[in-house]
Length: 291
Ligand code: SAM
Image 1 (cartoon, rainbow, N blue to C red):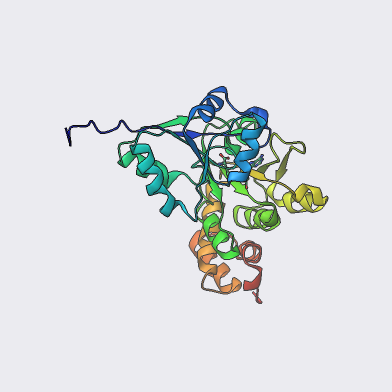
Image 2: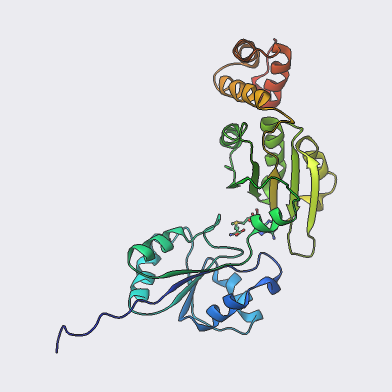
């Protein structure tokens, strides 16, 4: 009888983590799911094809990335609502962590589609596991802004935080990024630089922020590949007070030349004007003038 059919049970959306380098880091459950779903939504289908081929898996692939997710998501949701199962993967690591996925997951949940995580590697957790950080608190920031001014501004908001800070960075920005980290957070903080994790040229260096640029420049190979940077938070070692002075100074430097910013920051924080002027030049070399 027309209209008496039961609506189809929705299929499940599986959010599947994949390796960040070494293909053997895939989980058994991830393999089970990738083998059994009706189709796979992948950030870059060629990258995922390589992973599937390594495990002899052949499933239909749909591209889902930041540029098409608004148009592709409704079609995927319709298929899920029709009873098909779908796995979401990104190029590497865990979808939704500095990767596409959030839009599809939210839309699926709102549509009553079950969303099931299949956990596995993520570059941040991998780097933290070998960072040797005693403090249990850390803050995952992901990618800083690409443009210098926005990057410095973002870092200024982090200066006084007492937590380790975890950043992702791409090779073409790594030198500028560590220079800004040192200028804004101060050269003394400890940096764990984790490069090419789980890959052939994996490298982990423990440095001071002020040493990082020279370390990277000493060998062009050190600037290649993918990076996780873990930076110590503002702690008793560098003190909340200098961090606060740094923040005041950085704010003033947005409007004023270095000498004026240093003079006002000295009044506001009680720190030495000469020290603040030097810091102002570190933070914003182009703001230099005669003190
Ligand atoms: N979703 C991924 C995750 O769960 O880690 C992150 C994707 S994000 C687009 C890519 C960034 O993650 C890289 O630019 C790098 O900062 C970091 N990354 C990914 N693989 C890495 C690796 N093998 N070693 C170091 N960093 C890596």
